Image (cartoon, rainbow, N blue to C red; front, side, top):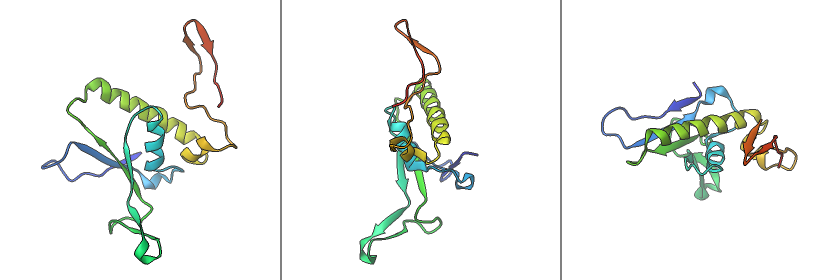
Length: 139
């Protein structure tokens, strides 16, 4: 599977979905990249590092938790009381769109900001707007 759900069980839980991109897939992006890419379309999905800089130890990266390496990341989605099925479906659609773009980039989200690679934020194979037709535009 693409994601690993980080869950404490079915009882006494918060209205939050916590997960991470499956590290076994060895993808060239992480949950922080996913957060940034989703924010481009105004979805706020929090990405977190499970490590921290310990300035008492010369700024070395250290584990925040004991069962995963310090460079591990995760994300969470807060399910608020106003979440509708329509909004949930839109979020899933945006996840799919963003993952397709991230999968196509050789260096993950940072490649989108590189001067060496021109990428569209939104690519239109064929779209019409106000009677005008657009082709794929590179930024």
